[in-house]
Length: 219
Image 1 (cartoon, helix red, strand yellow):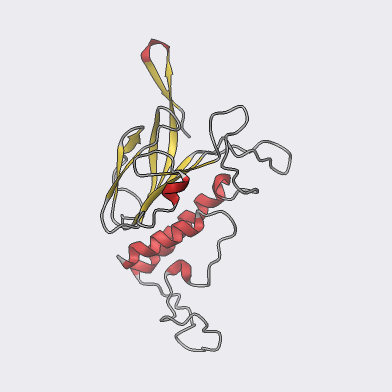
Image 2 (spheres, one colour):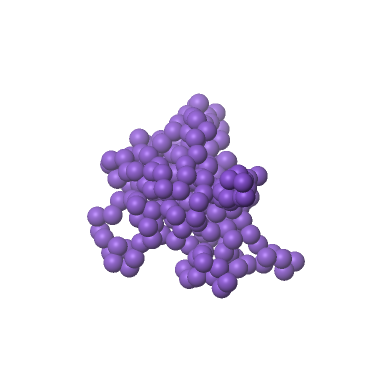
């Protein structure tokens, strides 16, 4: 459970907007035995042991993967803060906060002190940002699911993006942070969000074509 919580905290930090702040050794699970101000401790409390046991090597590999994911996708490091409103000329917003039933949260639900599970939809086509050359920035659309409950929660894939298929990128309930199968989830399906876990899914939009064929846009 402790190892899974380490994956949860690191994932929520690295996929947040702004600059992630890591102390040296956080990426390998280093502990200072509760000392949060060990600048004067020239001993084992503040030293870094680079001879990592297998479990810490695995955690370091996981953190490296999440950092690479963050660097690759601009939606996780926007230049401007979210607007939370409909984008001009489109029926999407740059950010949606979701209930476990896949519907958008309202102001009243934000004040529910007993809520333990929510979702975050980041729409890559609604960034309204430009790069250094003035070109519009577009990215994939991601769905981040967070379950702080002591019980599993079935989370419904939202219909805010229409008919779609979701690929699982991260699931912290697995030892390596990834599902052991290649299962995808369609709009309206429930994702089995396990106890105290964090899941990241990437959108593959399904477009219906004539003659009843289906085309999937993917990398």
